[in-house]
Image 1 (spheres, rainbow, N blue to C red):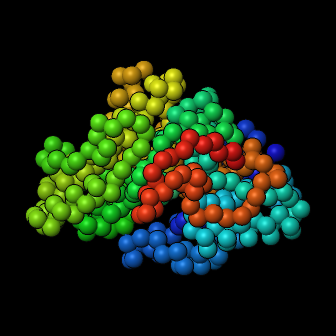
Image 2 (cartoon, rainbow, N blue to C red):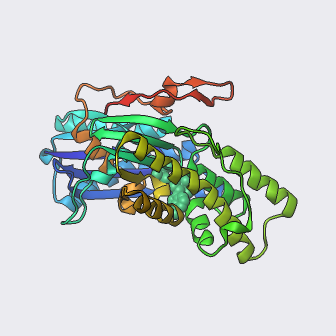
Image 3 (cartoon, rainbow, N blue to C red):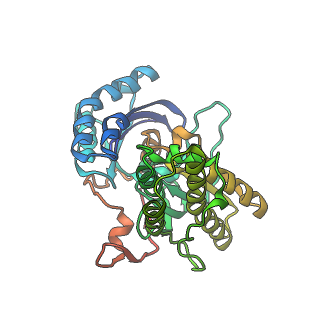
Length: 354
Ligand code: KG4
Ligand code: ZN
C-alpha cells in the first residue's frame, strides 16, 4: 500500500509518498516564503496561483524520487482544511484529476489531524513509531492546541488558543520589531543571545486552569513597549526583548502540556507544527518533561513544518467515503460557541476522525 499525499492549505505546495508502515519514500515541499515575504504575511490570492503553478511539478518530482508511477499507488490523500479556500481547492482539484486519470480513490485529510500524526513518519532506517496514546502540542502559524491522540483515526481536542496562534505571535512581534517574515526563526535566533529577565511580559491566562491559550495580549504589550521606548537600535537590546517575549509564549505552552499529560494519565508528550522548531520551547519542554517523568518526542523539523508526508500518513487510515469539501476554519472552532469578535467562548471536547 502506497499513498500519495498532497498539501496546499497555506504557503507550501507539497507532495509525498508514504507506505503502509509510515515509511517516507519521497517528500517534496515547494515553499512560497519568498513570494509572500515582501507583504509580511501570506497573500491568499498569490498563494492559490503559486499552488497551481507548482502542483504538477511537485507530484512528478515525488514520483521520480521514489522511482514510482501512478500505477504503483493505492490511494491519494489530500488536505481539505483548515486553510485558505483558493489554496485548498488547487490541491483537491489536482487530487481529483489524478484519481480520475489513474482510477484511484481520493481521501480528504484534516491538516491539523495530519500534524498530530507527523511524529509517526519513519524517515531514517532506525526510526520507530511513537506508541499511542500521547498528548500532542500543535503549535504552528495558524493553530495552537493541545490534543489527546488515541490512535491514527482518533484525536480529542483538550484546549486551544482563544485568539492568536503561537506562530502568529512570533510573526507579529517580528513585524513590530522590523525583523521581517517569517518571524519565528528570527526571534528564536535573537532570543538565544538575550536575557529573558530583562523585561516582564504578562503571562496570558495566568492562574487559570484548563488548556486554553491566549497570545493577543502579549502582542499588545509588546506594541505598547515599542510605542513607549521605540525599537531597540542595538542587537543586545533586541535580543533581550526577543528572549523575554519568547519566554512568555513558551512558558504557558509547556506548563499546560505537562498539566495535560498528568491529568490524562499519559506520560508521553509530542511537539508538532512549525513552532516546535523553537529552541526555547524545545529546551524548556525537555527540562520540564524529564523532571516530571514524561517522555518527550519532537519529530524532525521536516515533519513539524507543513509537508505532504503527514497528509499521506493520515490518509492511510482515512475514511474512503469521507467528504472532499474544503473548509477554511478549524472544525473544532466551527463547533464551539463564539463571542462577537469571533473568539471561542466554550471549546468543546470533540473527536476528530480523519
Ligand atoms: O507549521 P508551519 O510551517 O505552517 C503552518 O502555520 O501551518 O508553521 C509556521 C510558523 C510560522 O509562524 C513561523 O514563524 C513559526 O512556525 N516558526 C517558528 C520557528 N520556526 C518556524 N516559531 C518560533 N521559533 C522557530 N524557530
Ligand atoms: Zn500546518
